[in-house]
Amino acid sequence: MIYADNAATTKMSSAAIEAMLPYMSEVYGNPSSLYSFGQKAKEALEDARSRVAACIGCEAKEITFTSGGSEADNQAIITAARLGALKGKKHIISTAFEHHAVLHTLDKLKKEGFEVTLLDVHSDGLITPSQVLGNLREDTCLVTIMYANNEIGTIEPIKEIGEALKDKDVLFHTDAVQAAGHLKINVKEQNIDMLSLSAHKFHGPKGIGVLYARKGIKLENIISGGAQERGKRAGTENIPAIMGMAKALEDAVSGIEDNTPRITALRDRLIEGLDKIPYGELNGSRTQRLPSNVNFCFEGIEGESLLLLLDDKGICASSGSACTSGSLDPSHVLLAIGRPHEVAHGSLRLSLGEDTTEEDIDYIISAVTDVVTYLRNMSPFWRDLTEGKRQHVFAE
Ligand SMILES: *Cc1c(COP(=O)(O)O)cnc(C)c1O
Image (cartoon, rainbow, N blue to C red; front, top):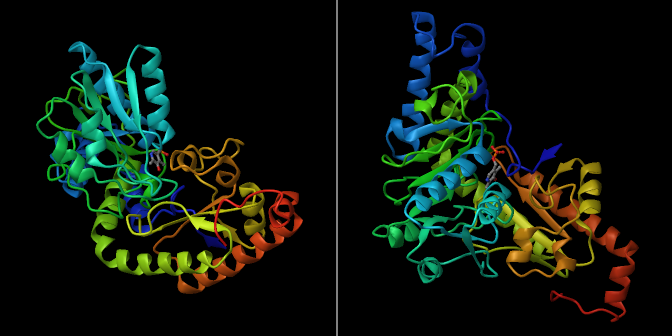
């Protein structure tokens, strides 16, 4: 099997698994307990917090552990909205191609009277700092823009946006779930007020994540209950997962320098190979993209059929985000970069990992080329295109 869906989730590293085990079998006490056995778990928890903080350039007390990227996004946005509302500021800026954890939270706020400006994404999958500034209003309380897109892998100019917003009375949140382990994160240098991470995207366990919130930002509870996480996130801490995440994040961050050139070369080899398929196009900028991400649209192809046939050939891929698979709506990301509906349905995302080899890439290129040809030969829609009854969207 070739696993080329690392943007959906990753295999846990053995180091992360090792780091978890003692906290399931030996040090299983509740960190909120007063006896020393519980305090051992508490010490581990605080050690993990410091190590996670060091990975993104902040202080330990600015880190809150959550159940994952979705919860961190929800909590960041709800916090900024509540704080904004106190000052009569109820306008939020985001983009049309955020993760649904962001977009659906914004939808909820709209029903509560917030106004949301979703910036148009350029056809290369990028937005600019001047677009953000151009839409800033007196009553803007939050700008939330993802660091890297989960479907097309484009990297947004987070540092420049942070710089532009530095002196403004507005909070800046970024969903950095796809960036972690691929791109350098330093919240102070990048002027980021709040940031979300998810462990299972960087070889850590599922169901655990991080919300960084700059000192002075009073987080709004999403989960109410006990006083864990300084009262900002109730529920007994998932110590094993937190320990696994801290180890995975440290390894991911220290591996960036070694992995980036190698994975980028594999990515470019894959793009070059798939580019030879006629009437197909890469989605998103060729250069401003994650080393691991390749995403193509092919005309006359239905994404689901493509994925099933690739599965038969032992390739795990995706047509966009795992969260929209199973729905027949075309990807909101591809629509946001201006792909017409009929080609947005024919997308393929391949996301590489540290284990991907050159042989894997060559196998994927030949498998995708074969499957695309096979599907087109059976498709009445494709026949219309070849007979000139419909217009092609892409060049040959
Ligand atoms: C995966 C992902 C999330 C959600 O993280 P979970 O831990 O699965 O809740 C949020 N944002 C982006 C960009 C993602 O890729």
